[in-house]
Length: 326
Image 1 (cartoon, one colour):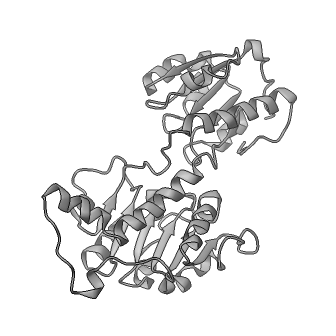
Image 2 (cartoon, rainbow, N blue to C red):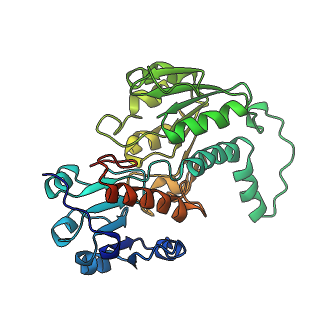
């Protein structure tokens, strides 16, 4: 089905749907004159979806809302990931969809680098020692001291905006960077070497750090499995700022418990929030942040920049949206 006619500016109503982000407030600062409101829960969104021509949402989205949203013409995702949206259903309903890819590329890349530095420079353990008022003495065992990044190798899985940005950070630390991407023939300018996803296990033995920055797709689900973990050096660090399902979590836990992998830094997990019963919480060689790598004080304005651009495109009748999905 072709896209439905898009309402004029004076007839448009936007629903911002997020429990924490101040999207409506930041949008109001633009003085667009466009009618808009914000909901903070799924229940509110379900109750008011029929009022909206445009919905700006992320994890609050449910595909059942397409049936409730009779006026809906466009959904602007707040997140870069779009696996929660049924693309076929959007196409069938004639509703356009765009992602927020790139909106938090700097933040996620910086977060991944911060996690690596926090572990390698013992900032994390230093914070733990601070809580117990423990002044750690000098370390005689060389392998247990703080480490440097210069000259070491980072494998980055996914060379989109986040992965490419992280590669530049790593190279600024004089690290060697290997990129892994679906099509290695393009987009490898920011790394020293690039290989196809199918060749991942072949480069894992070279990695001191493996950073996952890829989208969740059928091809990347459980990409880091028992075989991949076995290919990594036991001294390696795994960083996941992608999606939890990219990693076989049971296999990861087993590898960490057996010290076949030195450490993991996880911003995402298979189940979120991470259940209190998960052994990951208590593991000393694991650092966990609650899916906050993309959090930034600029998030709302970055999303609204994309939204406003896409609204202008829709009013002009453009077929191509910025980060267009459907």
